[in-house]
Image (cartoon, rainbow, N blue to C red; front, top):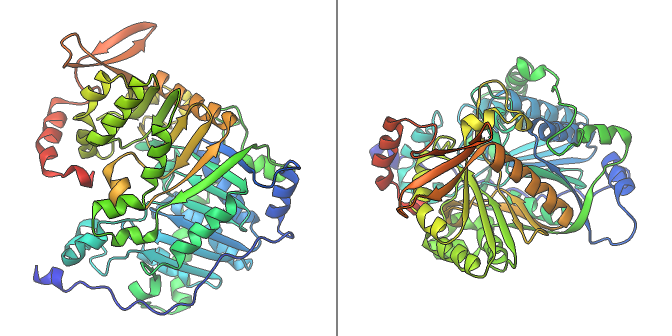
Length: 509
């Protein structure tokens, strides 16, 4: 406790306000957007869904290579792995061309990456900032918190946003962090995720959101948190040694088409025209001040979750949700029940216990399954073993598939894509970002991706005849198979999770 009391943030340096550079008509990316935009309504947004991990990573790399003026990058996690190295190396190369790079990272998962981030910050045209940083104990997540126990309330709030903006003209946003497992590059676990490329009217909204975070009082220049123990040249050399060696130097081996039948966006960059769907779009983001909220009620008032749930509650025909961490709570169960009583069909795809990388979160969901099923909600749980056999997901080798896509489709015309889970942590603790798009075409594509996952990679839940026991249904060689226990798990794993569950408050899940 004495050691923990020693932890405290240094004084935040006074930094002048920094805003996004306006888009330039001379930028090749701006020209590409102009050529790809149909004449007429300037309030429309163009979008391309990216459900395939390698395509999504390739889009970011190509945008960084083609940017001429600015790259504004904001992530919850950037791992010190081959994908993190590849992206940061490409950003460094852009900075060397004169592109201004602003990198904002939440400080929770920077463990093991201090030299990488500090070294990147040492380059000209680059600035790295940390959101809600830890003062010390930086060798592990547990030690970070132990060294700052007196500051736990503040540090329990994290920035969960994901945003990549090139030349203030093209944006990639959605659920993916920057790590091997988010782009199907891990040999052990990979996330079934989704994000999208955006151009047009929604881009200035997302640029303004980035600026609000970048200039927030909760964001510190990395030099304030990690005083530089080396010269700029030494820091740069360390960074180069990290990112210029190893497997990240290999070219991305892209499949010919994705799950929707599209080729890589980079091919269209080369051709000089993007094929996009167009519609109305609005960006939502929690205020960075959410981390200073003193109550759950205060946090919820500024939460993206409330905006999305308002749209869900107003649905007229059907709602399809994909959320890896799904903890509806009593209020959520009531809201979904109200929908089904109005004859609105509600379908939810989430993780099974076996596929959930946060098993304690599963217990927060599991306690509501029976009520949801009794109210008429269709529940599907992703199976790590069944997802391995779904070739359309392109999961490599024998790695396990885990759901990570955060999407909603309402009345087959409204689509939410973003970083928000349907759980208390997204509503009350973390900041989130999302985009609501009005487009039947995009809705059709998102539904198609979810449909493929729920039919080929998931179990459908139902109540047994006793109206209490759960059953997991799947099709095997055209025959229905009914399982009576949590699929793909051992007795020991289920018991262990059951024993730990009571010690984790639901509001922290």
